[in-house]
Image 1 (cartoon, one colour):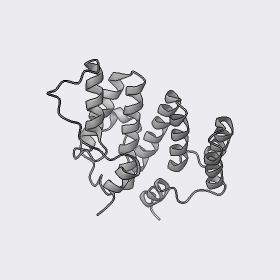
Image 2: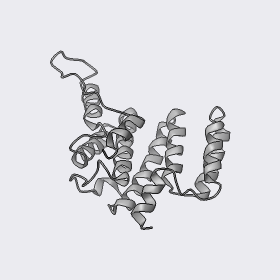
Image 3: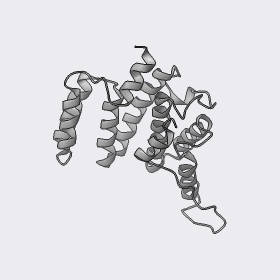
Image 4: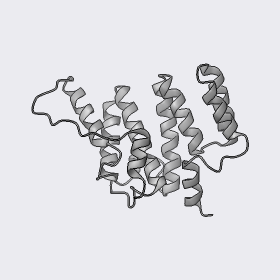
Length: 189
């Protein structure tokens, strides 16, 4: 199996090393006890450092626990992992702003795009407008069809810059699929 196929399998949460799936399941069961959930996630990370499924679980743990700085740190790690799978520079700011070929059908590209969107969102929530703006600009260049909904997030960023006013001449936001619906929207037809 080639490296791209290995990554595609990893993005889907398959091919987990022994013990990782159980540690992730335990983290899910213990989510009401954040220290216990984090201990399980740390075991998973020790067994499979850099595995997309582990990074996604860590990201979600921090995000839903309102630890946005920690979630953004995990998003940075996930961007590096995604970049390696796509043979891109490890620093997202060094990625050439040109459309991803096959972004709609390539799990590695979708992973990278969704992580970049999450990173931009967290940067926006953390008040880091320059980081959010630049990440969204790259995202829109990589995904000109806006499969992951960067335009909506950019609209939120623009409204925040204007002080949250909602002018009547602003266009209505375009409904964008999120979560599982977004993945389904990107799945091959």
